[in-house]
Image (cartoon, rainbow, N blue to C red):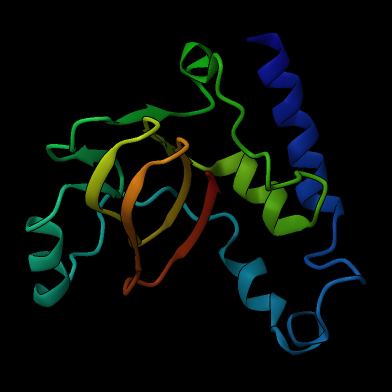
Length: 183
């Protein structure tokens, strides 16, 4: 647990010191993004409610096996060979064997460090090798405040199916979402 505290202290320092974008980033993002908007939103409380999917998307989610991230994780009936495991940084036991943030470098810019520091909900989706899982919907919802979601998808060799990802935000607030995948 002590290492988590040290890591969080280091992350807090990085969030204050790092620029939003590194010089190597694309000019479009670096020069045309008004980062002051994000600076004003970085100390929001965590959202206590989430947006609701519009009817046409909600119907799609209800007709397929689905995983929904909001203020908490909702997992529907998943196809055989598909597993979903919730994780967060506070419960070290749930991180055993899981290496989240492999695509997000905490020192890669202020928003990445902020995501690692403040994310509140993660899910690891594992599809066993050779599984024909059909369709799987993963929805990440926003809310009035801050929500940080981290999704890790590992698809085994020879698995077949489609993963439909929906990122839906209508409430004013700030949401960071990272989707990592390996297959």
